[in-house]
Image (cartoon, rainbow, N blue to C red; front, side, top):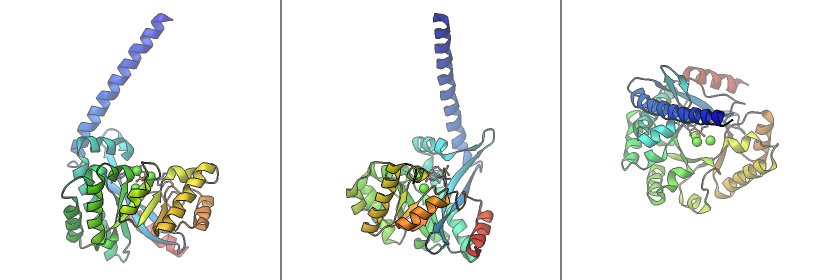
Length: 278
Ligand code: C2E
Ligand code: CA
Ligand code: CA
Ligand code: CA
């Protein structure tokens, strides 16, 4: 038994070692990915439950790794944040999303584009100017852009984050709190931020109507939105029951697999045409 235990221990060390090597390799590959053109964006429709119209698209980043195939963002975005490469990647995302918005405008589909903004990006001193100049370059009106920021994103340096978001808002850009309720939620910052939207994280939507606590949390976020005059977007809506419940409970906006998974631009346009026919 003792030898077996020792072997297991060695095996464990070896696998941790391997994991660190894999991570280092992934980090290195990530440095190259932007220049190598391995990123693309997919867009998930955001639906107004009342009017049944597609009102927006969340841009979501995809990395096509030459050996590993599609690497999920949850695996590489944290790495990109640690190494700082998220700053350049994030700029690329914003630029791509604005180019797409311009194209959709020309095609007669002037929807809003939601872009995820990392805490690291928000900490950049020139982030406001960078965002404004990107909009200008693509001739996108600021009201067509929504920035999704997480609670952890602005808690790091609250005063500076509030100052930047306020400037962005004064230009007409929309601000949403992403993953609301999963971070260090505090009602004091909510009051101080120039917000338009709260996003209910998919973890609360997933077990809606099954788990009583999750249902109550979703209800609370919807009510909070109402009392602060913020529209609430439910993320991760997968079933008709969830949609029905949220709509009746007063949640105006939703996105999720029930409507559509994130789509390539061409498929997105087809989805919108179809959805509006229904
Ligand atoms: P998020 O911003 O909370 O995005 C929602 C995630 O839920 C997306 O995962 C989306 O594909 C997924 N999702 C949408 N509908 C459903 C559904 O009905 N059921 C389930 N189970 N999942 C659904 P994705 O694309 O893998 O992105 C994961 C996270 O990576 C995002 O979470 C966001 O935090 C981050 N991310 C993605 N793209 C970017 C980006 O361009 N910049 C930054 N900073 N972060 C990004
Ligand atoms: Ca998001
Ligand atoms: Ca989320
Ligand atoms: Ca997130």
